[in-house]
Every structure is written in structure tokens, then in C-alpha cells.
Image 1 (cartoon, one colour):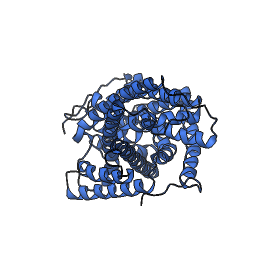
Image 2 (cartoon, helix red, strand yellow):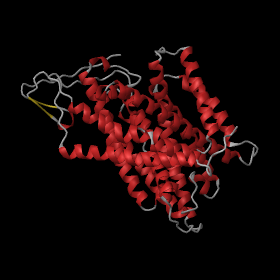
Image 3 (spheres, helix red, strand yellow):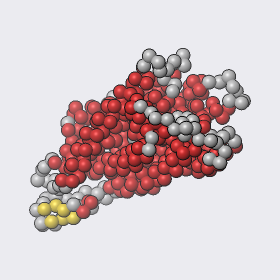
Image 4 (tube, one colour):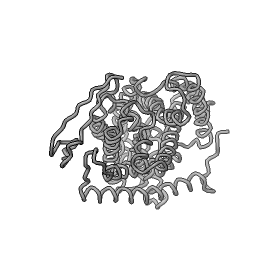
Length: 444
């Protein structure tokens, strides 16, 4: 794979990325690798939006009802913090490439490598486990939600088919597509995921506005801490895309452009989330379903929106499962080219996805559990922690990185609040799944 290196030298002071200044570092250099092939800023932005925006659009109105008015604050704060973490995670990979030339190539597990360089081998293993759980759980949620939507669309035609059966059929049908290698091998998926979610949001917002004129809002209720933390986990899940960020960045032509892709993506995501979340919260109130579409008045426009959102969720599933495949395949040293071993391995993973989805068919509970646990770690805790650790490392051949005191305080606040809130949300989700009065009956 071809690339171009650009090196700038100065005897006393050189300009570094993000306006940082390198003092007395004549041996330091800024490395920029531009590949001949790879994702551009727009393509990377589409992948980020495509893998993040689906389930949040449908689940956030219910989460806002359970958290009350403070949920609006949480929505904004979580978005800003997730965007900050995503940008800093991109900065981490740029530092790794600059300091370690052996990583200036296509890599199947970049997030784990960042963890290893920041805190050691143990951290790398922890990150790999969290990524696998996060993306596996997110993918399962996407397929469960798509199955529920498809069942609702076809209920009048084949009323005897259940969500469980649709989940099985969809999982089998999309397995061959998963045999492809990485996001750049199916770039149209990213475009399709964004177009479908944008169009469906427009249709749903129109329907919410129409329902506001005819549907009486259910009286507000006061919800306890259990509902609050469960719903906080749902909001966290809605911004939990960081597990795939390093993989997307590693597929870019110029990885230093990734921060721009993250910033643009989160702006667009909030433009999608905010109107539909506030609208669903105000119009349907306590009557809003965790799947927003089930609360809307049924008509052709809602059906079209459901078709688009179902397609989006399937596209998003293809995006989020890919980093899991690449990470595990790297661990087992499977061939990077198309090979029968890859097909067998990824098919076996799909068997496990089917088992989990059929065991816990209520997607909201998985969403809250993943959001409060591993997503909190990979999106809100690890990125700023690794950035701080990498900046604090010193080597005469590396650019000196100085974190301002106010940013360091902010990083520690993120870590502490993330850990406390994540633990509370995880505990509430576990009680919801395995509690005596809320245990979900498996499909089988």
C-alpha cells in the first residue's frame, strides 16, 4: 500500500497538530501517512453515523420519560463527552503511529494497540474483551429491533410468525455478507445506513407532529432510581460508537482527518436525536414505547419509515460486528485475505448471536446492560485515560505533549463520573434482566 511521508524539522520550535508546540526538540518530527486507497473524511463520517444512530432514535424518547427533564441535560452532556472521547481516541492512534513505525499500516485491532502502548498488555486484553462484548451486544440489539419492526410490518400478512423467528431468518440471510473483510470492502453500507436513518427520522418527525394534534398526552409519573439508571444506560448506549472508531480511522487515507469526521458525525447525530426525542417525550408521554414506532398512529408513512429503519439497523449490524471479527481473527492469526477459515469463524459467531438474541428477546434490557457497562468504559473512560497516559510518556525522540490543568481535571471527572454512573446503570440492568419479577422468557 503506497503512502507519502511529510516531515518538518525545526532547530528549536516546531508546530505540531492541534497547535501544540514542541520545545527544544530538534529530533522530533511530525509524521503524516497518506494512503493511496482508503476512506475519506466523508466516508468515515458516514460510517460513524451509520453505526451509532439507529437504536438511539427509537429508544431515547422512552429513556427521557423515565429520567424526566434531567434526561435532556444527560443527552447533551453524554453527546459532548462522547465526542470528546472519540476525538481523543483518534489523537491516541496518531501518537501511536508517530512513535511506533511498525503500526503505520493496516491494523485489525488498533484500539487494543492503543491500550497496550498506554497502560500495558493487561489493558490491551481488557479493551479487547470490552470491545467484543460491546459490539456483540450492540449487533444483537440491532437485529432484535429490526426483527420486531419487520414483524410489525408483516403482522397482517403472516400473523403467526414471531419476532424470534424473524430474528433467526434475518441472522441467517446476512451471514454471507459478513464474510467480507473490513468497512472499506462494503463502503456503500455506510452510505445506505445514513440515508435510511435520515429519511426515517424525517418521516417519524412528521408523524409525531401529526399525532400531537390528536393524541392526548398521558399524565406524567415520577420514576424511581431503578428506571432512571436503566434509562441512563440507554442514553449511554446511544452514543457508544467508540469501539469501532479506531478501526474506521485505520481504514482512512489520512488518519489525522479522523477528528474532523468525529466532530461532524456527532453534530449530525444530535440533529437526528434531539427533535425526535423531545417530540416523542412531549407527544406520547408515559405512553411511549421503548420502540417509538409502536406508539405512532399506523399509516403508510410510518410503515415506510419502519422499512427504512429496519434496513438501517441491518446495515449498522454489518458495521459494528466487523471490528469484533478483525480483533478475534488477529488473536487466532487467521488469514487476512478471503479464506474459508474466516467464513467458518464468522458463521460460528453468528450462531452465538442467534443464541443470545433468542435467550433475551427484549432488546431494551440488553441495550441498557451494554450501555451501562462496556460502552461506558470504551466511550467515556478509556479514551481520555489513554490519551492522558500517552501524553505523559516521555522519550527524547517523541514530541513533548502537555495537557493543560483544566483539561486534566476534566479528564478525571469524566473517568470518575463514568465509573460511578456506569456501575449504577449496570446493576439496574442486571436486576431488570434476572430479577424474580422481570425475568424474560427465552424464545426457545
